[in-house]
Length: 355
Image (cartoon, rainbow, N blue to C red; front, top):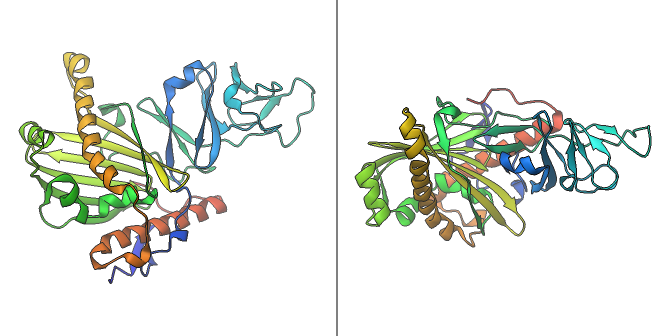
């Protein structure tokens, strides 16, 4: 096979020869991760395992949000079992208190606060009632969203979760694997797919398809939306995919966020979005039902991929000429992962702003 020997990343051309070794992929990509629903914090702090760390999120009495390392700097107690006291998070073991920046502000047993008494804080963002966390001391790029769309214009479903038995980087690669569409989705590709990098941290695949399936879902899709769809998938660092499906009569949005798990598995969360109705009646009666239907369609559409990905294991020596697009995706993913890790180590953001 002869895949492209070069990949563009951060506006530069990087050499990339052949499928990368599996050791080149990080255990956890540098990116945004979905922590969970903001509403969970109404009952107090919530701790969760993300990207190999135990994190705690909490909202102070005045409404400020924070995400910190969950293991207390004293003896490692889980701060998610503690409580919020005014603007502080209090450890349940010895009542040490931390502010939203992770600084210890009070130790009841003594007036002197040791230098080690500090929790690492993480960048976070709130959107559609969900809390997202960046796995670095600084966010290298803003929480992604659809180009030209204000988040307030869309209504979002609750996340659907599934665990897939495959490496995390195979989820994003699926969007760039044109071979699988006819096998998985009863879609006939109209013309060649286009692949580009709209920003320094993203890679996009776009293609147009005819909806050919005979299933009830495909028949309803043709009736309600149209018999052709333009599909665009923008991948951010391998773990966050923004999907736009444009039919003749409607447009749907989907968000896929992944989380690597032990033993080569991955947690996949899927949310569907649609534009809010302009009328009060539409907002009250139709929006929730409409986004729920879209969510059902998207999750059923993706379930065929999840089934086929079970047990998939990456082997660079088994790539063939038809896998050229996949190899180029893997090359890009390794390059962006290495550059992000290097930027975090150096304490600076790479040149170029994400579009």
